[in-house]
Image 1 (spheres, helix red, strand yellow):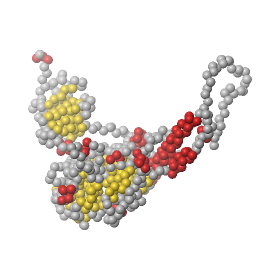
Image 2 (cartoon, rainbow, N blue to C red; image 1 turned 90 degrees about the vertical axis):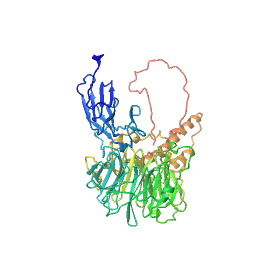
Image 3 (tube, rainbow, N blue to C red; image 1 turned 45 degrees about the vertical axis):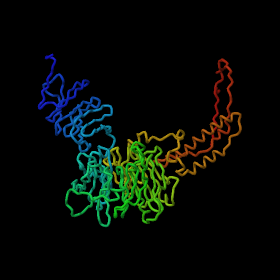
Image 4 (cartoon, rainbow, N blue to C red; image 1 turned 120 degrees about the vertical axis):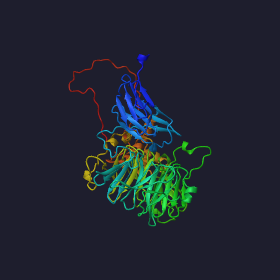
Length: 632
């Protein structure tokens, strides 16, 4: 009927619209780049106007579950709007999301919370909404922290997050010195390092570029990029070889890109050097995830398929290959278990002699394992152990200067410290190195670790949006950005023995009951871990103990066996707890309970009780005499 029709007049027309019956809203978008929110019964004037697109709006959708509006323009830019405030919550550019070509179709899928975009290819943009931070929780960044580094020249800590924000902190107090945003546009920062002088900062991003900054004022000095497709940069390092300074970057292009740092070259854009011939012919076949250097000329890289290659930087030749994956005919290895190696660390003191048969390279591996490799006198695997009981993937590795201690961080936020001074020096090791201590530093994945040995402190960052400082033995100093500053030289100003609130309340931080914890940790399987002499002594004494014969010996024997397992688990778990954190609880002295030597089982006769009224005439008498025998 003519009277039931409503006409909405929009300037330059409508290219896309979305109607939500539950919220009784109509949203339109068109060539004027404006999104309008309408009441279906009031066509004269929109109830809200959303401005921000730089191209005609081609798709809009009302997500009533999220209370958001999704829109996409002709330039492949996606924006998320809040229906209550009519403000833009997020803006994703086509360059950051990797969408190229002309937009042909778009669809929001409420189940997986993803936006399906069709151009020349099909792309899925997944919506990840982080939890709202509680007011009492301290955060260093508003977004997950990707990595952090310490600058010994200025005694500053530099951290970067996924929102492409770089912050500079004072290491001695934890106060923020400066920050600059948009380092790689709308693309996130993936890695950072310093030059040899410590006056310039090098960052790598998901846009495939590296940028050199004067990080004190946030001025971009140079942009390093290659002519090929802009593949994501995963890691970078600054190296000085024969007085030649260069930046080495690796990433999704599966090649080692070397950029020479020439002091008198004032060109803003720089191109990489030609690739090494060995890199082109025998290099990685998958995305390169990590690069580390060992002066003066060794370089190690690792890839997604688990392959590790050691290079000679001076000649550009490949020195050796480790953990080379076997080809599987007709099957993509990505469908199998994760074999990626994302962390490497050199034991530099063992590389002084090139004929050393000891382990000189550490890497992470599948199933939360840590591996020690020999590079000389026959390359190969020397040791393999798992530090985490839950087999959490090791996310960061750092070694002290003298190769005495190794710090391992995992995806659950734990930091494990091992003594490796004598480990792997004499060939294959069947057990794990000696555990020094362990503690929970973050509630999410630890993205980077760095030792500040001049102050005997440890720097850590995590996806939980925090950057924290710890002592070498795990004492909590503070979170960068907290309200109350600390003095790194005054332990009384540290947060220890207090721990961060979210770590204290997280389920992974809860201790396990000593008597109920009977599972053998994954790191102790296969005889890799060193047995505790206290445990062996208690178990031996337990096995030698014999209970006196009794008519119900079977019942007594079963309870004795149950007590053995409980006490063994209690001894082991108590040792782990004392090594993990502070304060440490002292385990009670374990002795064979003498009650088991006098325990007897008697059957109760089914005799009905006499229903007689008790005699209460006697005063001062105890009707229920019970005696307790104390045992020293």
